[in-house]
Length: 581
Image (cartoon, rainbow, N blue to C red; front, side):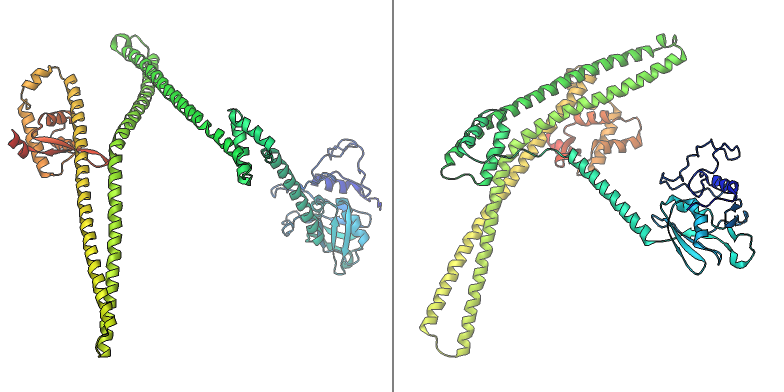
């Protein structure tokens, strides 16, 4: 359908305001030549998102941008733009996949031909459903054409040059919700979802690891091959998997039992090899740890040398000859080197502490394992005796209840006892006596076991105290060694001299004795020093500990707690030491 335009310039200006290439009714460019006002090259329309074939919905026009609308002249009608000062016409929310528009405010005398003439410029029209009440629904081929049609919302239409009300109207164009559009949109979404699922499936198949090779069925030939592979260290894992699969399938029977036993025997022969490999790897790990420790100690030595260089450079003889920038750099380098050295030193000390902890744990475990086994055996025997005692008590209660019932029956009957009942009573009494004797024996055994348990517990406490005393002696010897290194006087003089050297130390001994006498359960050295530092801030913890260590008959040190909660506490033992001295 080709209808020539009466005024192509106005229509081209309106389309240019929309950013579209002006096309005629037949779809050809209206202006083949260059027009400076429109800014288009000859024969080449501008590429815009709303051009047919791109299938892209254009971005909405910002509300701040003024849109200039002009008069559009068609062959059978004229479109007059709305007042630019009025707000834009309201539209409903755009349905998904919308290709249909609602057009209201049509003239009463408007025909379908006029509607096609006006709206075919927006794109290919698929269907028009016109109503008798001056409105219609137009379905376009693509979604972007709906945005072009919405541009005409608010225009006043006049058929020809008539001023009759039936020949005039105000167009209202809005989105319409159509089932066909929704169905096509859902089909498109389903197609996209299928494509996405197919793409994901292909990606999963590409990334999926290959399935393991199938295990062959059992036969004498395959059995001989697997037996040979089991003897080879490189093919052992594959052969063991095949053997395991055969056993789980149930291939073992009387005829093949010898073959399977030989294969299991050859698999067992690899146990020693694996143990040796583990031992070799552990040895390599120990050697690597030792190398790491040696390398770390060498690095620490070099760090110490570097820090010594920085400290020597910081002395006044060399420091005065450096500039301010050089001094700043030297101080920064010195701080960095000291931080790195401290980190490495802490790491090395942590490795040594772990080794010492492992050694001490092994020694303690060896002594405690035997005691734990003896205690567990005695505890199990005591529990068994308790259960037996309870069962005997329940049986005694049951027999007593039976005797009482028999006596009640005899009192109700009011007749002489039969010889059978007398025999039953005698038997029951004998059984009760036997049960009571047995119960007494069990109670005696239970008391004996409890006494043995208490003895074992006392022995365990004594052993723990001996261990604590040994640890205290080791700590004292280490402290005495450090104190002998720090002091300037030789060991003979300190042994011959008195433990209290000055009046200040005598005052400290009196204050500490009073403090510990108030705390009978002992106190840590930090707690004692915090109390003394309230009296004098110059008191040092190491001096106080050395003083208390010299007075062994006045103060003693004990270990309290178990495991990670071990704590050293000092106690006052002057009253006991007075008797000894």
